[in-house]
Amino acid sequence: MPGPRNSDWVDAFGHLGVTEAFFLAPLDNLDSILTNGVLPKTEVNRRGLAHSDISLRTVQERRDKRDLRSGGISSRGLHDFVPLYFARRTPMSFVRQDLNSDLCILVIDIAKACHTADELLFSDGNAGAHNSEIYSDPAELEEHLPLQVIRASYWPEFPDGRLRRQAELLVRPTVPPRAIGLVEVVNTPNQERVKAAIKRAQANQPVDWICECTVSPSAFFT
Image (cartoon, rainbow, N blue to C red; front, side, top):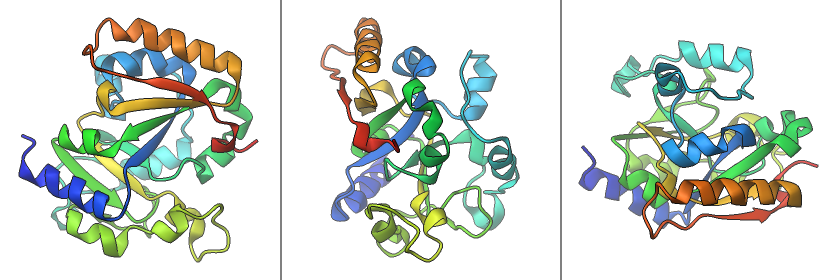
């Protein structure tokens, strides 16, 4: 169950000035996300939820093979966690920029995501890559989270920049809708679509839940 250790994560992120994380999602999945939260791949499959998938097959195969039990990191598989990025513009969003009009960026309140989690991990690069490390102790964030690469306008000038830009916060079992405070889209028609989805979701969320939508072309590669 969530407990004091969750507060350790929030405090550690706060010390680094990291208050938000990001999830690139197909607009087709937004109604489900705003109802069920952001779910891990295994849970989406277990529930049989219809969804659009923008992931790369080769990347998912690597993630399938990453053994979190090695070294006692976790008793779960990588696909049992929701993967969040610490940057909006990532190699993933660069590769999928042709889909910008079909995508949105969920801006996640890290404190809310951490406080409701059963388990939290972070990686110093793409979690599916063999040359990235995964950590279970929030005290290691300051040393191992590559903030210089994450906060840069672009990543090629850094050693292993592509890898490090994709450092992840791994959250289990879900990121709840109340942790989603903002949805960013690339154009105005998509903003209207998202606002309609938010309105539909509000009926099933706490009355104090506030989620907004902004048009933010600079959050995407265009």
